[in-house]
Image (cartoon, rainbow, N blue to C red):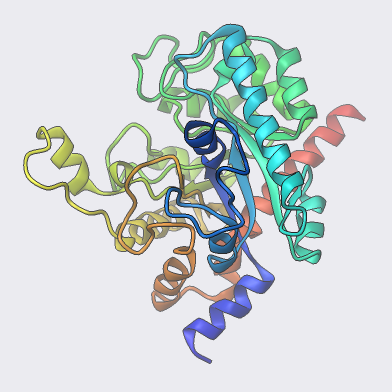
Amino acid sequence: MTTAARLTALLEKHPVWDGHNDLPWELREQAAYDLDAVDIAQRLTTTHTDLPRLREGGVGAQFWSVYVPSRLAGGEAVTATLEQIDCVHRMVNKYPGTLQLARTAADVEQAWSDGRIASLMGAEGGHSINESLAVLRMLYALGVRYMTLTHNDNVPWADSGTDTEVLGGLSPFGEDVVREMNRIGMLVDLSHTSAGTMRHTLRVTTAPVIFSHSSARAVCDVPRNVPDDVLAALAGNRGVCMVTFVPQFISPAVVEWRAGGGDGPEPRATLADVVAHVEHVREVAGVDHVGLGGDYDGTPALPEGLEDVTGYPRLLAALADNGWSDADLGKLTSGNVLRVLRDAESVAARTES
């Protein structure tokens, strides 16, 4: 069997479940959420993502980011988050033959059985709840299944990895947020958070956590990536690190070029850079704790070979060439995150009983 045939069969059984795609914000920026003006049923040249290319890339489930920038605060952030959620709901309703809203692991599997792409949502940044557990619960009721505790800036109750450390992790209210997320079954996403917040959260949580779009700090030393001690702790937590494709998080050459002021042409990140991160997360955390979170439509540049959502099979082919078995590739594409969501649901069910 050729590698291509092998991967086609693999993706039919274990489609890609990507951890983070910013298409909803791109639709806001390009067309003020006019889904007729940007018809994702067509192959587009202005986005990284559309329905034909998702199919070509073997994507069977997507966490759509309902991101709002952290410059928005208070009620303004809540309103913008609700507009993002509304966009995802309308997008799913507009393309019912291809997309299916999913709230549970069972819903994801049902979408696959129906031949549709399971659509879940992730809120990117704790500023979206305006320090209100009630708002958190209402986001969950609307279908949001993870929340990234911070974006690029601190929130009053948690430190971001790209802001000045204030708390050293979580405040008491931040611990309450994590516990409430555990109680209702919402995944805690530690991408963007400081290493202190990562470690503090792992001490508090009773459910597996995710990194929806982060890579390995040992391979590329930037604050957006995950230190080895945290990766190692994922095994005990049963969580998953979903490796991202963002060049400035995966390529030391790109990081060095930016630090030097950007003289000369920017180096291109490559598919091999992503492979290095996937292999490192597997080595440190274990094959049961690695996934994929491309951050398509959330970054202007992407690695050679991964320029849009059609790239996943090329990445899987490179890993297959490295000796990955079908079983392990299936864990990477969706098996691990499916287990994590199911575990979070079980924790919530036990908490409520």
